Length: 153
Image 1 (tube, helix red, strand yellow):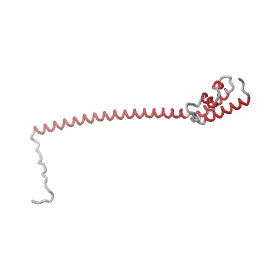
Image 2 (image 1 turned 180 degrees about the vertical axis):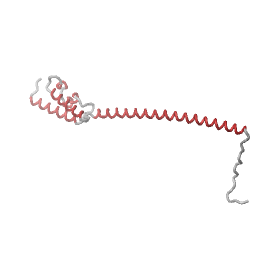
Image 3 (image 1 turned 135 degrees about the vertical axis):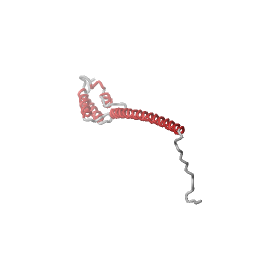
Image 4 (image 1 turned 45 degrees about the horizontal axis):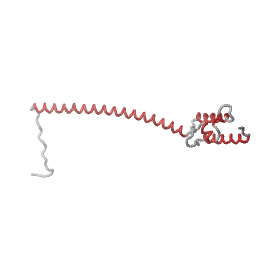
């Protein structure tokens, strides 16, 4: 079925309006910034954008504008921006987890070393006490008596 020039112009205007909305980031729920969504938003059959079909030049225009925005660093599809943000967050969290695991390993090693030193020091103290008790050369000091300060007898 052939369409009139007026219908074709009207369709192109709808396509360009939908194209502008998509490129501004006004993505409908469940859609993307792609030809399929463009066709759905403009209420045009998607096959009209391919091959020698009547709106293939608009597909080319849409893809050029989308590529230009992407090269400029603008993300027109908020889902793509969210995916990129979440990927960066996952990478940062993995790095943080690796650092935390390294810190835990270091602290565990330090704890083992500290416990080993304490055990060695305890054994040395026990040994010295036994040696001191066996050799009566050590004179024990008298323990301090509790006296009240300021009282005279």
